[in-house]
Amino acid sequence: MKVFRDTYHELRSQICLGILRPFREAAESTPQFGDRRSYRWTGKQERGLKEVALDIDEGADIVMVKPAMTYLDIISDVKENFDLPVAAYNVSGEYSMIKAAAALGWIDEERAMMELLTSIKRAGADLILTYFAKDAARVLNR
Image 1 (cartoon, rainbow, N blue to C red):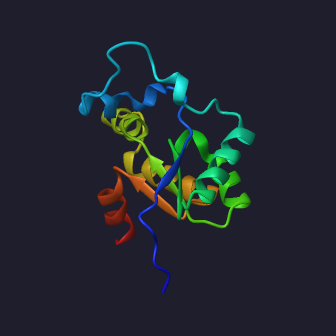
Image 2: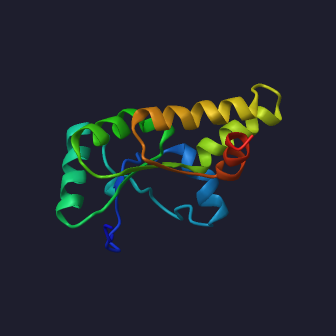
């Protein structure tokens, strides 16, 4: 049995995305001034893969890509290039978009949720962190 260290590094593939706003507001962590662009990855894949390699060299046992929905290509690239589990974080904004559209009757919430989670899995995620966890479990256990 493999014992995992406490080391947990993530590929911070955020580019000051508006879809992170619901979490920031709930956590009261919206920047009071400026923005967070200076410490975020620029989105160039070669740099992202180098960051993952550095995290692995530092002892990472798992790599996390977030937000999942808008970085399916990054999830796939990390899975293809590294021999570590890949976690994908389906962030609050992605969750909120589906919830809001369903509340307005524009989409079928359950179907959209399962299509999103399936696409993240197909991209290569070994683990999906999502606010939909309980709802998805209910659907999968039917």
